[in-house]
Amino acid sequence: MNKKLMLTLGLSSVALLAGCSSTPEETTSQISALSAQVEELSKEVDALKANKDAAMAAEQAKEAAMAAQAEADRANERIDNIAQSYTK
Image (tube, rainbow, N blue to C red):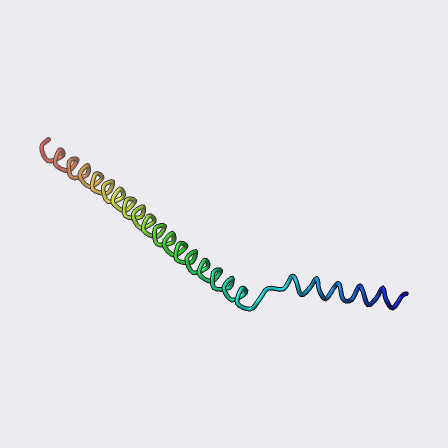
């Protein structure tokens, strides 16, 4: 009886494992689909990085322009003070 039980369990486990396995074509198609998804997501990440870099460059340009404007205002104020001292 013990041998019959072991034989039955062994055959049923082999049948179960055989039923769960997928064919090589299915596996290949799944791998291809996942590779395509990874490639698409990589392109999206690259695009987002490019957008972020462009936004950072624009922010840096804005900060540089504001600093230049502040420096120009300060220089104009100095020139105005010099001009007022000559007229007195």
